[in-house]
Image 1: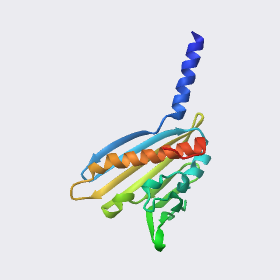
Image 2: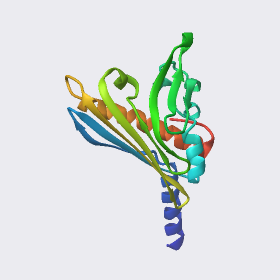
Image 3: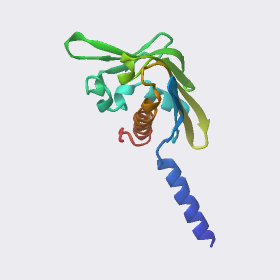
Image 4: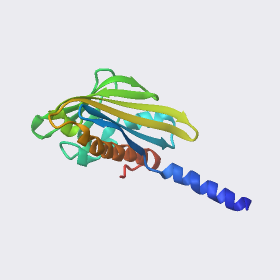
Amino acid sequence: MQRIAHAVAGFLVALAMTSPARAAVNDAATNGFSVTEAVHIAAPPDKVYAALVTPARWWSPVHTFSKNAANLVLDAKAGGCWCETLPGGASVQHLTVVYAAPGHGLVLRGALGPLQGLGVEGALTVALKPAAGGTDLTLTYNVGGYLKDGLASFAAPVDQVLGEQVGRLKSLIETGAARP
């Protein structure tokens, strides 16, 4: 019986270590939405932060303007830019850093992807907390503003995209390769 209990406990620990991010649409209304992604990463906060601030290594190229994540750069200091270079000398600013604390987290402001052309603003907060066997990462993106037909319909797709990115970050840190 004790062997079975140990086997079950081992299975549950392995499952927790490989489980995807917990995702949630916290709120969705006509004037905005809030989504949260939470995941445990089997690495210390400093290692998680170092990977976090290099989005070219883990962000999906599908969710870039250039379709090439290597064009992403994040200057992780207050006022710094999460930017992307585009062909022909063009560029895009995705977010601006308002708080950067190595090993602890980031706060960035701006509208991601298709939200950029709308009358909205967002705050993306990434918190890193030491936890048994690694780091608990929580990403929250709060978006508010005006759109004639409302913003509620954007919540689920944004949640899905951010969940994918958090999963890719976890995969990069734990396996060396960013996989969906």
